[in-house]
Image (cartoon, rainbow, N blue to C red):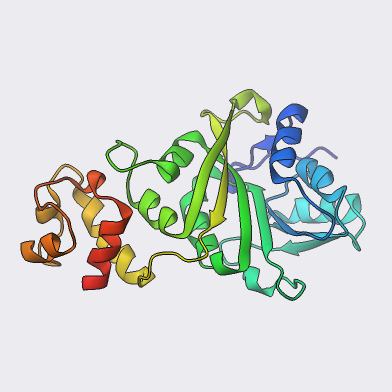
Length: 255
Protein backbone atom coordinates (compact mmCIF):
# COMPACT_ATOMS: atom_id res chain seq x y z
CA UNK A 1 0.00 0.00 0.00
CA UNK A 2 1.39 3.40 -1.02
CA UNK A 3 2.18 5.83 1.80
CA UNK A 4 0.86 9.36 1.26
CA UNK A 5 3.30 11.95 2.70
CA UNK A 6 1.77 13.84 5.63
CA UNK A 7 2.14 17.60 5.85
CA UNK A 8 1.72 17.67 9.62
CA UNK A 9 4.86 15.53 9.97
CA UNK A 10 6.74 17.65 7.41
CA UNK A 11 7.24 14.59 5.20
CA UNK A 12 9.26 15.11 2.02
CA UNK A 13 10.83 11.78 1.11
CA UNK A 14 14.25 11.81 -0.54
CA UNK A 15 13.97 9.61 -3.63
CA UNK A 16 16.92 10.65 -5.85
CA UNK A 17 19.32 7.67 -5.87
CA UNK A 18 22.36 9.80 -6.74
CA UNK A 19 21.71 12.19 -3.84
CA UNK A 20 21.06 9.28 -1.47
CA UNK A 21 24.38 7.68 -2.45
CA UNK A 22 26.18 10.98 -2.08
CA UNK A 23 24.88 11.45 1.47
CA UNK A 24 25.77 7.89 2.49
CA UNK A 25 29.25 8.33 0.97
CA UNK A 26 29.69 11.49 3.09
CA UNK A 27 28.60 9.58 6.22
CA UNK A 28 30.79 6.59 5.30
CA UNK A 29 29.19 4.04 7.68
CA UNK A 30 31.57 1.41 9.08
CA UNK A 31 30.58 -2.05 10.42
CA UNK A 32 30.89 -1.24 14.13
CA UNK A 33 29.34 2.25 14.03
CA UNK A 34 26.45 3.19 16.33
CA UNK A 35 24.27 4.98 13.79
CA UNK A 36 20.88 6.49 14.60
CA UNK A 37 18.68 7.76 11.78
CA UNK A 38 16.02 10.32 12.65
CA UNK A 39 12.92 10.23 10.46
CA UNK A 40 13.80 7.25 8.21
CA UNK A 41 10.50 7.57 6.36
CA UNK A 42 10.18 4.83 3.75
CA UNK A 43 13.70 3.59 4.51
CA UNK A 44 15.48 4.63 1.27
CA UNK A 45 18.58 5.93 3.08
CA UNK A 46 18.18 3.38 5.89
CA UNK A 47 18.76 0.52 3.47
CA UNK A 48 21.99 2.04 2.15
CA UNK A 49 23.28 2.90 5.63
CA UNK A 50 22.46 -0.53 7.01
CA UNK A 51 24.29 -2.48 4.30
CA UNK A 52 27.77 -2.39 5.93
CA UNK A 53 26.49 -2.25 9.55
CA UNK A 54 25.84 -5.00 12.10
CA UNK A 55 22.71 -3.10 13.15
CA UNK A 56 21.37 0.45 13.50
CA UNK A 57 18.65 2.43 15.28
CA UNK A 58 15.93 4.65 13.79
CA UNK A 59 13.49 7.08 15.43
CA UNK A 60 10.16 7.51 13.62
CA UNK A 61 7.01 9.34 14.71
CA UNK A 62 4.55 8.20 12.02
CA UNK A 63 2.89 4.96 13.18
CA UNK A 64 2.17 3.81 9.63
CA UNK A 65 5.85 4.16 8.75
CA UNK A 66 6.87 2.41 11.97
CA UNK A 67 4.74 -0.58 10.95
CA UNK A 68 6.23 -0.50 7.45
CA UNK A 69 9.80 -0.43 8.81
CA UNK A 70 9.05 -3.42 11.05
CA UNK A 71 7.93 -5.47 8.05
CA UNK A 72 10.55 -4.18 5.56
CA UNK A 73 13.68 -4.81 7.64
CA UNK A 74 15.17 -7.60 9.73
CA UNK A 75 14.31 -6.65 13.36
CA UNK A 76 17.68 -8.01 14.48
CA UNK A 77 19.43 -5.43 12.26
CA UNK A 78 17.07 -2.46 12.46
CA UNK A 79 15.92 -1.34 15.91
CA UNK A 80 12.88 0.92 15.48
CA UNK A 81 12.03 3.48 18.16
CA UNK A 82 8.47 4.75 17.70
CA UNK A 83 8.26 8.29 19.00
CA UNK A 84 8.98 11.98 18.68
CA UNK A 85 12.67 12.80 18.10
CA UNK A 86 12.13 16.11 19.96
CA UNK A 87 11.42 14.12 23.13
CA UNK A 88 13.69 11.15 22.49
CA UNK A 89 16.52 10.46 24.92
CA UNK A 90 19.45 9.61 22.64
CA UNK A 91 21.56 8.77 25.71
CA UNK A 92 19.42 5.62 26.11
CA UNK A 93 20.73 4.05 22.90
CA UNK A 94 23.21 1.32 23.93
CA UNK A 95 26.78 1.72 22.69
CA UNK A 96 30.05 -0.11 23.31
CA UNK A 97 32.37 1.32 26.01
CA UNK A 98 34.00 4.50 24.68
CA UNK A 99 31.81 4.50 21.58
CA UNK A 100 29.80 7.52 20.47
CA UNK A 101 26.64 7.91 18.38
CA UNK A 102 26.54 8.99 14.76
CA UNK A 103 23.20 10.74 14.16
CA UNK A 104 21.86 11.21 10.64
CA UNK A 105 18.59 12.20 9.02
CA UNK A 106 16.47 14.10 6.56
CA UNK A 107 14.91 16.35 9.22
CA UNK A 108 11.40 17.85 9.02
CA UNK A 109 11.97 21.47 8.01
CA UNK A 110 9.08 22.76 10.14
CA UNK A 111 10.84 21.80 13.41
CA UNK A 112 14.50 21.85 12.35
CA UNK A 113 15.72 24.48 14.86
CA UNK A 114 14.08 22.84 17.94
CA UNK A 115 15.51 19.49 16.79
CA UNK A 116 19.02 20.94 16.43
CA UNK A 117 18.87 22.40 19.93
CA UNK A 118 17.59 19.06 21.27
CA UNK A 119 20.47 17.17 19.61
CA UNK A 120 22.91 19.70 21.10
CA UNK A 121 22.01 18.42 24.58
CA UNK A 122 23.66 15.11 23.64
CA UNK A 123 26.72 16.58 21.89
CA UNK A 124 29.17 14.99 24.34
CA UNK A 125 27.83 11.52 23.45
CA UNK A 126 27.99 12.10 19.69
CA UNK A 127 30.81 11.50 17.21
CA UNK A 128 29.19 13.36 14.33
CA UNK A 129 25.88 14.39 12.77
CA UNK A 130 24.85 14.56 9.11
CA UNK A 131 21.54 16.21 8.34
CA UNK A 132 19.49 17.29 5.36
CA UNK A 133 17.91 20.66 6.13
CA UNK A 134 16.49 23.67 4.37
CA UNK A 135 19.45 25.40 2.67
CA UNK A 136 18.61 28.70 4.36
CA UNK A 137 18.86 27.04 7.80
CA UNK A 138 22.24 25.46 7.00
CA UNK A 139 23.53 28.83 5.78
CA UNK A 140 22.50 30.34 9.12
CA UNK A 141 24.20 27.51 11.00
CA UNK A 142 27.58 27.99 9.31
CA UNK A 143 27.42 31.80 8.91
CA UNK A 144 30.40 33.89 9.94
CA UNK A 145 30.15 37.12 12.00
CA UNK A 146 29.34 40.10 9.79
CA UNK A 147 27.03 38.21 7.43
CA UNK A 148 23.29 38.81 7.24
CA UNK A 149 22.56 35.17 8.12
CA UNK A 150 24.70 35.16 11.30
CA UNK A 151 22.46 34.98 14.37
CA UNK A 152 21.38 33.02 17.43
CA UNK A 153 21.46 29.65 15.64
CA UNK A 154 24.99 30.37 14.35
CA UNK A 155 26.38 31.28 17.78
CA UNK A 156 24.71 28.53 19.80
CA UNK A 157 25.64 25.75 17.36
CA UNK A 158 29.16 27.02 16.58
CA UNK A 159 29.87 26.97 20.33
CA UNK A 160 29.23 23.20 20.31
CA UNK A 161 30.13 22.05 16.78
CA UNK A 162 32.47 22.45 13.84
CA UNK A 163 30.10 22.57 10.86
CA UNK A 164 30.36 22.34 7.11
CA UNK A 165 27.78 22.72 4.35
CA UNK A 166 28.59 19.69 2.16
CA UNK A 167 26.32 20.21 -0.87
CA UNK A 168 23.02 21.63 -2.10
CA UNK A 169 20.06 19.38 -2.98
CA UNK A 170 17.34 20.55 -5.41
CA UNK A 171 13.59 20.17 -4.68
CA UNK A 172 13.30 17.64 -7.50
CA UNK A 173 15.19 15.07 -5.37
CA UNK A 174 12.14 14.71 -3.11
CA UNK A 175 8.59 13.42 -3.21
CA UNK A 176 6.69 15.66 -2.78
CA UNK A 177 9.17 18.38 -3.79
CA UNK A 178 9.60 21.07 -1.08
CA UNK A 179 9.30 24.70 -2.13
CA UNK A 180 12.89 25.41 -1.13
CA UNK A 181 16.40 24.17 -1.84
CA UNK A 182 17.94 21.84 0.72
CA UNK A 183 21.49 21.26 1.92
CA UNK A 184 23.45 18.55 3.69
CA UNK A 185 25.45 19.66 6.73
CA UNK A 186 28.17 17.86 8.70
CA UNK A 187 28.35 18.66 12.42
CA UNK A 188 31.25 17.48 14.58
CA UNK A 189 31.04 18.22 18.33
CA UNK A 190 33.94 20.28 19.68
CA UNK A 191 35.75 18.24 22.34
CA UNK A 192 37.10 21.26 24.26
CA UNK A 193 34.55 24.01 23.69
CA UNK A 194 34.93 27.46 25.26
CA UNK A 195 34.03 27.23 28.99
CA UNK A 196 30.58 28.72 29.46
CA UNK A 197 27.13 28.01 30.93
CA UNK A 198 24.78 27.07 28.09
CA UNK A 199 21.73 28.75 29.62
CA UNK A 200 23.60 32.02 30.21
CA UNK A 201 25.01 32.03 26.69
CA UNK A 202 21.53 31.35 25.32
CA UNK A 203 20.07 34.23 27.36
CA UNK A 204 22.71 36.70 26.13
CA UNK A 205 22.41 35.64 22.49
CA UNK A 206 18.59 35.65 22.55
CA UNK A 207 18.52 39.20 23.92
CA UNK A 208 21.28 40.41 21.59
CA UNK A 209 19.53 39.22 18.43
CA UNK A 210 16.02 40.23 19.47
CA UNK A 211 16.64 43.68 17.91
CA UNK A 212 19.21 43.09 15.16
CA UNK A 213 19.08 46.63 13.77
CA UNK A 214 20.08 48.27 17.04
CA UNK A 215 23.64 48.58 18.34
CA UNK A 216 24.54 45.91 20.89
CA UNK A 217 24.69 48.40 23.77
CA UNK A 218 20.96 49.04 23.31
CA UNK A 219 20.13 45.39 22.66
CA UNK A 220 21.75 44.30 25.91
CA UNK A 221 20.61 47.28 28.02
CA UNK A 222 19.45 46.07 31.42
CA UNK A 223 21.65 42.99 31.17
CA UNK A 224 25.06 44.67 30.87
CA UNK A 225 26.53 48.10 31.49
CA UNK A 226 28.63 49.62 28.72
CA UNK A 227 31.74 48.95 30.83
CA UNK A 228 30.83 45.22 30.86
CA UNK A 229 30.72 45.17 27.08
CA UNK A 230 34.13 46.83 26.88
CA UNK A 231 35.51 44.35 29.45
CA UNK A 232 34.33 41.49 27.21
CA UNK A 233 36.06 43.06 24.20
CA UNK A 234 32.79 44.16 22.58
CA UNK A 235 32.47 47.57 20.88
CA UNK A 236 29.23 48.99 22.37
CA UNK A 237 28.46 50.68 19.03
CA UNK A 238 28.66 47.51 16.94
CA UNK A 239 25.65 45.47 15.81
CA UNK A 240 24.90 41.98 17.18
CA UNK A 241 25.66 40.21 13.87
CA UNK A 242 29.28 41.45 13.91
CA UNK A 243 30.12 40.08 17.39
CA UNK A 244 32.08 36.79 17.24
CA UNK A 245 31.33 33.71 19.34
CA UNK A 246 34.27 34.31 21.69
CA UNK A 247 32.87 37.68 22.76
CA UNK A 248 29.37 36.29 23.37
CA UNK A 249 30.99 33.62 25.56
CA UNK A 250 32.90 36.35 27.44
CA UNK A 251 29.62 38.21 28.05
CA UNK A 252 27.89 35.04 29.26
CA UNK A 253 30.74 34.45 31.70
CA UNK A 254 30.23 37.97 33.08
CA UNK A 255 26.60 37.23 33.97
